[in-house]
Image (tube, rainbow, N blue to C red; front, top):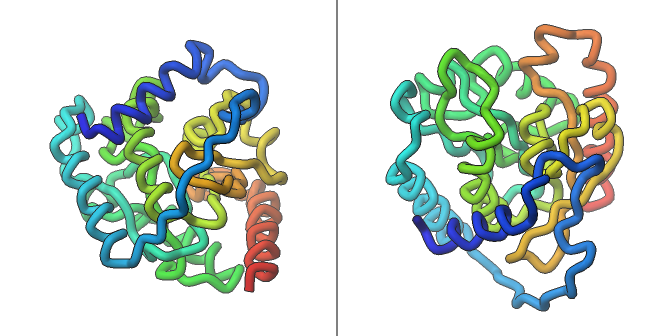
Length: 236
């Protein structure tokens, strides 16, 4: 196992057996003394090489999910983006093409981004799990935990200003909570990493695939997108 992955995994496991059983999003460093870490300025080429290393590690990682999937799906978009979108896992279309969010849900996601004046090329898109689960089932807690170190490494490399979580699986993985999405959305949370000096503002919203099945939730999703848009305006 990659040393960075091993370090992250040990940190997760040592955080407690009730990892997914909390009543509120977890602040990893709530009772910890802040550790001063040097600022890391990674240029685009170096970011790309580090992401490619993650891809290699994912390919080398032995997982039961690989047996039924066709292609590894890691990311799409801009390595220097201020916004990282995190979904659940690849579906059939993503598995065929090896790119996240390319099916019907991906088409809706593109429209959602355009609604706040963002192109797909403006953001970094990835998933919690990088292989398609059989029959598009929801990833298990063990699978989320298994792939979380790879996701954390991506966040550390890209260093987005904002994380937009698409669906309950992404919210569970990043916010470390079993709370329903309806209780998490509509407000900003913080994601903290061992390797980043500053926390990352994070918002949870509905997955585009869910919105296709339940369009009555599009209004709430639009409200979440507007919250992101407002933050981006303040950044510019």
